[in-house]
Image (cartoon, rainbow, N blue to C red; front, side):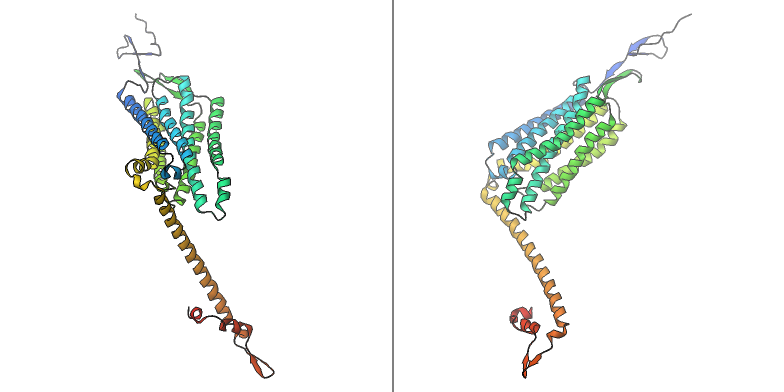
Length: 362
């Protein structure tokens, strides 16, 4: 009588149970077409971002670059290069160091990127809506404070990653439960920590969207409000779609879904915020002048002053009508006093009689 023995974990039995065959190993490989395509898009993103950074450095003294807060723009472009580069860690055979590095690299890069956009937008909004002298805003919203805020926002994400790696570090995992294949993937260690990482990123993106929406009417030379708003909408659509896709797939497709989400978000930020500026710098230099910036700023100031004047006039008319109504209903306004046989007008009557005719007609 024949004796059956169990096949090892890395092999599977044929239908007749006569022999064992080695299982194929599955992960998002550098050599398969899907992995190659994702890697090419990531490299393309790095090259495009480096090109934009080179243009901004070359034309750093022009009005368009200065008005966009060039120092934070440089840091923003550097963070986008990190975002595109972080997607490459998701490709290849998962190893422990890759699993521990890929989520923190993605999370910190994105928070650094969104923090730069948030601080840039909020600074311009506060300056244009200032009710106190601009010198105070320059003092409190100087470059050092801007970088400090970016550092603090990013530091929160760094601490989330440190606690995650200390308490429940991710690692590579081999799934032998599927016939014919062995799936090598990353065990994230703590899905709650991953949720905090993505949730904090989305929270900053929501705040950034709020400030961008508030600053949508500022001069275009100083704010990319409508482009930031559009890019944040794409960001939310991508990551809201990512969550069900992430939990409904398995194997190499889990990594592929996250790479697609990272690339889509990064390309949306790069295209929406910088492509229009690069187009003006390289192909429309007539719009990259101090006169153009001054005209845009003056037009915004004129509109703001006109709105303020209208609000002030409306409030003044309301106060005048309320005062006039109360004076007309007061008995003292229509009573004249007699002193030594002479009529004396009441104080309220004298005040109204001294008003110019033109104002009374109004």
